[in-house]
Length: 425
Ligand SMILES: Nc1nc2c(ncn2[C@@H]2O[C@H](COP(=O)(O)OP(=O)(O)OP(=O)(O)O)[C@@H](O)[C@H]2O)c(=O)[nH]1
Ligand SMILES: [Mg+2]
Image (tube, rainbow, N blue to C red; front, side, top):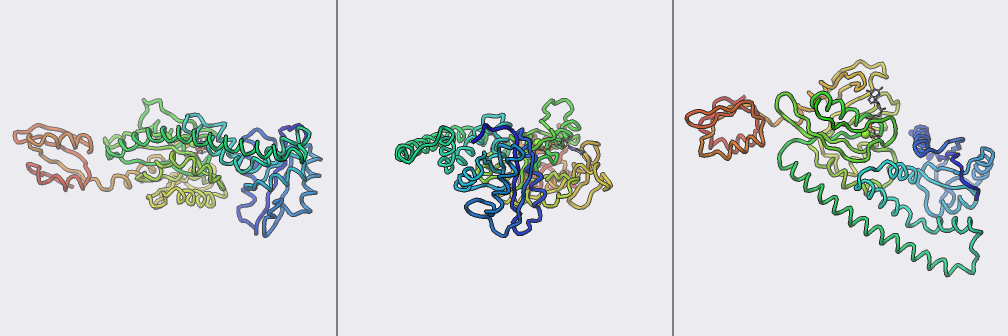
C-alpha cells in the first residue's frame, strides 16, 4: 500500500432510494473535513442490497479503483460501518487505506474529548470497534512489511490471540476506571435531584446551536458567571455534559445541561460508551430540543434525535422545541407555536419566549401561597428555604410567615402543621 496522503474518495450506497442519502453523503464530507481529510472525489451506487463481501457491486469496485488512482487519493471512506471482512476485501482489491463512517466519528470524538471521562469513553468505544477487526488490521500491517507467508500463519494466529487478549484486558481496566468516575458523578447527580431543583437538558443534532442557547441563557440570567461553554461551527464541538444553574429574577431556579450532539448512524459503541454521560438526559424534567431550522433536512434530523433519545430511554420526558437559526430563513421570529419557539440565538431574539415555555413546563406544579409556620415547627421553615422560592419572611407572634411559591404537593403534605393558611392562589 502506498504512503497515505490526506486525500480521500468518499463512497456510498444508496440503499433502496434512502431519502436522506444525499444529505448523509454531505455529512460524510463534513466528518472527513473534521478529521483533516481532503475529499477529492465521490462515488455512489444505487442498490437494493449491500454486497456482503465488498459493500459495492463488483463492477463498481473497478470504477472506484480507477477513480481513486486518478485522483491520487490514498484513502477511501465508506458511508456505512463496514464489517471486518469487507474492510479486508476492499483493502486487498483497492490497495488503498479503507475506513468507514464509524471510525471517522470515533476519531473526531477521540480528538475532541477533554475530560478524563470522555477520553475513557471514546477509548473503550474505539477498542471495541477494533477488536473484531484485528485480523484485517494485522493483515494490512503484514502486507506493508512485505507480507507474511503461509508458513508463519500459526505464529501469526497466536500473536493475534495475544493482541486480542491484551485489548480485552485493556477494555476491562478502562471500564473499571470509568465506572469509578461515573459513580462519583452519580453521587453529585443524586444530590442535585434531591434538592428538587428541576433539570432541563438541551438535546439535538450536532451543530444545531445547543451550546449557543446555553451561553445566551447564561448571559441573560447569570451575567456575572463566567461559565460559558464552547460553541463553534463544527461537528461535535461539545463532547462532555456541562451543568449550569440558572437563577431567574422571580427567585426560581433550575439546572440547565448541555449535551453531546447526535448524528445519524451514531455508532452503537459510542451510544453505549456515552450512556453514562447521557444518563442526565434520561433523568431530566424537561428536554429542549434545539433544531437548526435553517437546515432543509431539519425534519429528518429531528427524527434522528428522537430515535437516539429512544435508545437512551429518554423518550418519555416532556419536550419543547427551539427552532434556532431562524435568522437564516424567511420565517418570522420570535414566534411561539404550541411547543415550538422560532428563535435566533445569533440575533438574541426569542430567548424570553423560550424561557416562558420552559417555565410553564417545569414549574407547573408550583402554587403561590402565604403561610404561618409555628416556631416549634422550625424545621419546616428550613425545608421551604431549601425547596421553595421564598419571596418574603416575616416573624409574627404565632410563627414565621413565609410568602412563597412552593410545590403543591409540599403544601398539601404540610398544611396541617401551618398555624393559619392565609392566602393561596
Ligand atoms: N446564523 C446563526 N448561527 C447560529 C445561531 N445559533 C448558533 N449558531 C452557530 O451555529 C454553530 C454551532 O453552534 P453550537 O452552539 O456550537 O452548536 P451545538 O449544537 O452545541 O453543536 P455540538 O456541540 O457540536 O453538537 C456556531 O457556529 C454558532 O455560532 C443562530 O441563531 N443563527
Ligand atoms: Mg455544543
